[in-house]
Image (cartoon, rainbow, N blue to C red; front, side, top):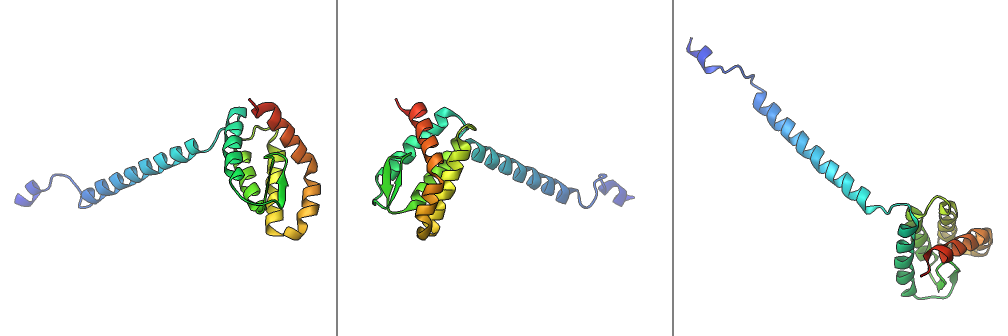
Length: 144
């Protein structure tokens, strides 16, 4: 009879279950915070976000050396086409839908030039209309 009094109706795993549930809930909260943090870090697709990223990238690129690869959009020349590809990649994340395809195209063109410099002339010719479109759009929307 004394054994029955010791039993409080809890199973032998109830302490383990509480700890597991607590750990799973804590992990879920941490994952949710991380997801929100990363979502907030992504620029929104808008003219204002695009122009902000453009200004930041233009300032960053202006500090890099070189004169091999020109960019009409950034009005600069660099020895590393990959730097332009990275800048266009950042711009693509903020670009409004009306200009996004051309920005993405330029990212790919400069990446191709960086990966295979022998393709620079062909790649630059294939991107001439996108370059002009992005340059014109940027001038019209991002100049003060």
